[in-house]
Length: 331
Ligand SMILES: NC(=O)c1ccc[n+]([C@@H]2O[C@H](COP(=O)([O-])OP(=O)(O)OC[C@H]3O[C@@H](n4cnc5c(N)ncnc54)[C@H](OP(=O)(O)O)[C@@H]3O)[C@@H](O)[C@H]2O)c1
Image (cartoon, rainbow, N blue to C red; front, side, top):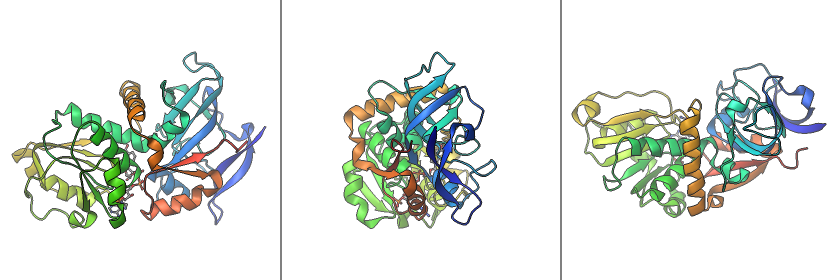
């Protein structure tokens, strides 16, 4: 059986659609899956464009850190043939071949049974980005931030993590201030639930002083670097900041003052290795959100052949919301 996959090679064009067969797939894994939908995340864009060292395996390689579809062969009773699954993280699309292929071999420990009430397409509109936003919301709630504590910032707000963070925080009853570099995005962010929208320029020069006015009860930060430095200096007493990204850079120059004089909590979020218990709880929360919010408002469809172009666009910070990859016609 032949089917299509997006292969990254050492050729000048780097990523292109190729016809492959089951024998080409890696031999590891106890489950064969048919992929209906995948998505495009920041990591995928780094892998496809080659702008970051995300692929930690030999070429040719199939990227795609997210996938959802149907079990085709399995020796795991939790994932019977014909059942639906989703998968994010665990190094899939970085260390082992990922979701930009109509068929893939997976270990069942990387899979989550598709929650009742969620479609495979909705699961991939969410993908790693929305899952990370849910882990960030849960961290904020677990650290006791009351809904009336004050405004919560979301940086990189029109991106995948950012869009879902705005939706999730607003749906949970928090007041959301979205921070964006896109001057035209106010309507979009307000429709997602933001009360206020601020330009990225307010934060991109970093902290003006170690402790600035405490304006924010918390933050979901997918930008890092100078923006996170500024956010920490402006977080209120006992505020909670969830650090989940590095769209602007990985460095962080700060002081201990926000932590020891205001009790600010800086919480790290890692979706890749999130254990199964909290992972499934987060997906149940996302399934509940899908009953209240129309995910389609932030979704853009692409086919496999258009993934490289969309990844270029994402690397330039030029996309809004979530790109979902339709693999249903690929074999
Ligand atoms: N910790 C985890 O488990 C985890 C999981 C998923 C993603 N991440 C990380 O989270 C970040 C966002 O991922 P994503 O998939 O949401 O990517 P994305 O869709 O490309 O969103 C990133 C957003 O950040 C803003 N941005 C881009 N370049 C920027 C710059 N130079 N300075 C400031 N803001 C910039 C843009 O939003 P505006 O134009 O609205 O400002 C952009 O849309 C990435 O660093 C990714 O690696 C981490």
